Length: 121
Image 1 (tube, one colour):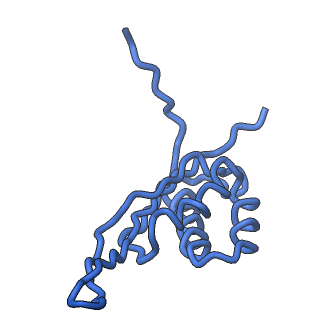
Image 2 (image 1 turned 30 degrees about the vertical axis):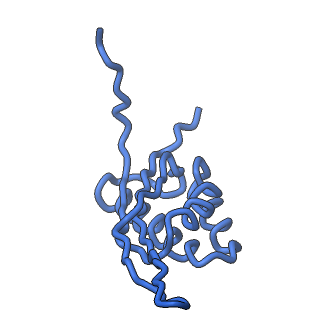
C-alpha cells in the first residue's frame, strides 16, 4: 500500500509563547482558515481581538517566507492550515479569605500557519 503525498510547495511560519490563552486565539484563527491571503488580512484588520494583530503578523511572515524561499507569488497563496497549541502556563496564586489561596493560570499559545498556492484552472 502506497501513501499518496501532496508535493506542492508550502511556506510555514510559527510564533511561540504568545501571552494570550489558546482558547481566545482559536476564535480568531477559525475566521481565516481556508481563505486567500488578501481576504484573511482584511478579515483580521476588522476583527477587534488582541490575537488578530499576532495572527496578521504571522500570516505576513509566512507570505514573505513563500516569496523569498520558494519564489511563490503571494497573490496566489491561501491559508492551507493554521492551528493553535497551548504553550507554557504561568501559575500564580490569589489570596482569598480565611487563608485560602486560589490558583490563577496565565496561559500562553504557540501558533502555526501553512500557506500554499491555489492552483488556478
